[in-house]
Image (cartoon, rainbow, N blue to C red; front, side, top):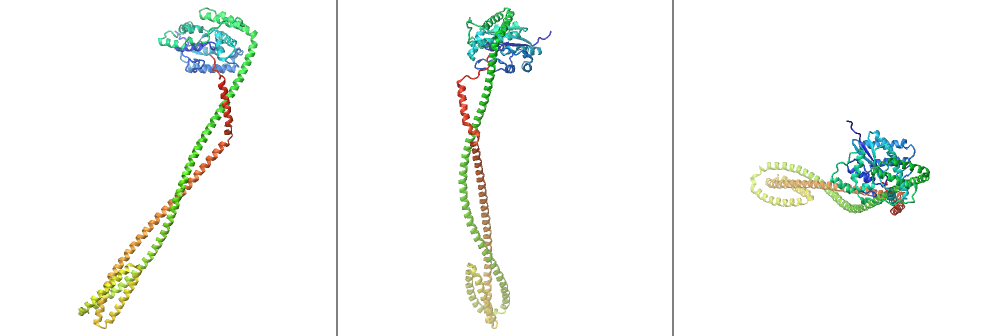
Amino acid sequence: MATPPPTAVLIVGMHRSGTSALAGLVGKLGVPLGERLLAAGSDNPKGYWEHEDVVALHERLLSRLGSRWDDVRALPDGWGESEAAQEASSAIGEVISRDFSGNVLWAIKDPRLCRVLPLWVEVLQQHQIRPVVLFMVRNPREVAASIEARNHWHPLVGKLMWLRYMTEALTASSELPREVVLYDDLLADPIPVVTKAFTRLGVKAGSAISVQQRKVIADFVDVADRHHTTLAVDGSGSELDAIAEQLYESLVAIAHGANRWSSADKIIARFHREWQKNGAGVDAMADMAARIDQCLRSKEADNFRLHSELAAQIRWSEEAKAKHEMLQAENAELASKLAAQIRWSEEAQAKHDALHAENAELTSKLAAQIRWSEEAQAGREALQAQNAELSSKLAAQIRWSEETQAKQDGLQAENAELSTKLSAQIRCSEDARENLEASRKENARVSSSLTAQILTTREMQEKCEALAASQADLQKQLLEQVNKSRCQESALGQLQQEIRNSSTRLEMSEAEAARDHAIQAAKLQEAIERHDRLGDELEKVLVERFALATELERVYASASWKMTKPLRSALMLFRNRTDSSHGPTRKPQ
């Protein structure tokens, strides 16, 4: 057994006829409507249940054909063969393949389907999908009243649109399975009305409805949503009013089971004849209205563009203002930092000056220390020379003493007299020791004392030579000379130790002076480097501040900034006018 083809339910009907309620009910019965549905609007808070891509391609097609949703004129002859129609067919095929591929049953709702139904039938048949048409019909007087309340149009305009939509949809669906649902019946008992229409169309949907679904549907389809009840027929109506009433009566009979399709076809033919006789003026007015609407749309587009540009300019101005304020804050912060930097620089300069003065003082002290070190070095060299001379003299003295010792061996006979002379020599040596200790206190007197001692030694030598003629005198002089030589040797050792101590202190003073000099030089170099860094940072801050000032001057001098005030005034005027008038309405249903 062959698999039946998929079925597409095309929900058609005039705007404000209840097509949204019917489509929403069909969707709640489990029939897919697509995922990309339009959001609800103020004129239809429960949702439009329209595929947004389908609505967009319908509006694009009508616009390219020189028409729109509220145009009462017939579409141009041969419009189905136009390039716009071919592009629309391709777009319809893409929607079907993308959103409904694999579904055995799905539905599409848009009142504009009434006018472009032939295109959908052709595309669906090309895709081996069975199209069925479900009409949503409401009394034309109620439709006209609803459009008048929303759009402030004369009721005749609504009736003419109702006739145009219904006659074109009925003509295009003459060879298709189709059923009619009345708006009054849908509000009274929605589920049986729709399931009965589905059964007649051969659509298997809504056969098993849960209690929860019934509650949801009851809340969705509410009589309270009806705002315009059937109005009395005006006896002074035109021929087109009469045609609309008769066509509606035929559709009511069809919805209730009567086969009145042929009667409806006759009424449609009567509408076309009446339009041929009296429709030229309506066409002219509709064409003028279309041109006015086109001009209005162009002006609205220009107005929207200007509004966008103005909003962009205002945003730019606000951003510029925010940037200016930010720059001012940054400038204030930089000024504060600069003041702090200047204070720090002044403090650093004061510290630098103090360090400079301290360095100058240290330099002076260092120079004095260097001079003192040089003088000490000179004194040390002089002492070393004197020490060398004393060492030479001491060596000579030692040699002489050895010679004297040799002579002493021959003079031991007169020990008593020599002992007396030794005591005298001891006292003399003690006096010489006191003189030597005084010489150590003053380095300048050391040389003089040493010279005096040498002279004394020479005198003793001369006396010793004089005593050589006399053995008694020679022995006496020899003993004195021996004792003096021993005292001189002890004094000389002490003098050498003092010289060594002086040399050690001098070397320590030189090392300490060198360390102080190195420390002060390092501090001076560090102070100079810190001063250079402060100068570089101060110069960088001044350059950044100058750049900020230049940027602010450029912003204030720019043409965009100067234009801000009139642009704001224009935006305020535009907003006031927009608030005092009705904004653009949403696409009518």
